[in-house]
Length: 315
Image 1 (tube, rainbow, N blue to C red):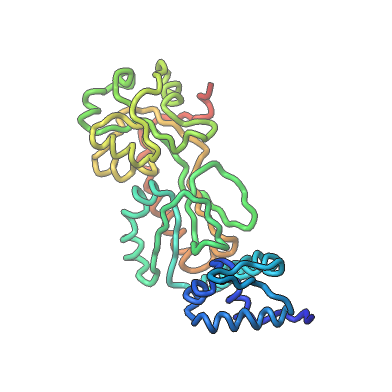
Image 2: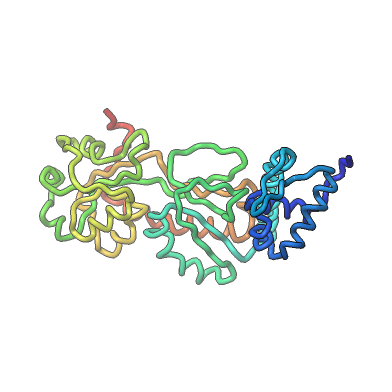
């Protein structure tokens, strides 16, 4: 038996047939005729000198040899596909795919997309809004913007871009009804669960301690997504402990106000993440530089506020 690897086309035919457990479905996937696919698998079996499939009346099943080959063939083609995508990205200077959480994409990134497009008309910008942990080797993504506590990750370039802070936010009409922080004792509070597992926590309980106010029970409407809580506050549904990264546009355009001085800071931050070395690619560097210029304007909204680190008011 020869140790020489069989032709790649024959292995590709086997991989498709093993995944589909059907020669006809595999042929359709590869856009070849069933006869052509059957020929490739037959040539692979001759190379191995053993059958890989048992041909039944209306189905096929793997032999012991087929079961031994199938996982490695699948992993091998997945690895080739990932390597090919990575190679294409190194020579592509005209497109950029960015992934970020749905709330940050909707509230911060998407409204600014046209500004980046105007200043960089040669770069095609694409967004993937998801909280799923991305694999740069597997997923067709160039840059991830992720929120959380700082950590080092091997093989990745990571740069902080926004350090988050929070303060009570509400519609202007509601602010007139609750002009003093102590008035929150009778205000409808909105809660968001997107940071519920962070430690130290930055929630209403922490803010009341920071403001030296009696605690309130966690009653009121709860939202799994922070942007939904903000939308409820804009509609006058209550007071939200708003995250400045998500609420900036609504604050600037007057849909929300920040009537109190106390704000919570946290070590949690937005990070710009990409494979190590990719940060030097022209479109990646252009996007990072643009992001840093954009987030600099957040500093203006800190004026007049008193900041308390959430870690200092934990119980």
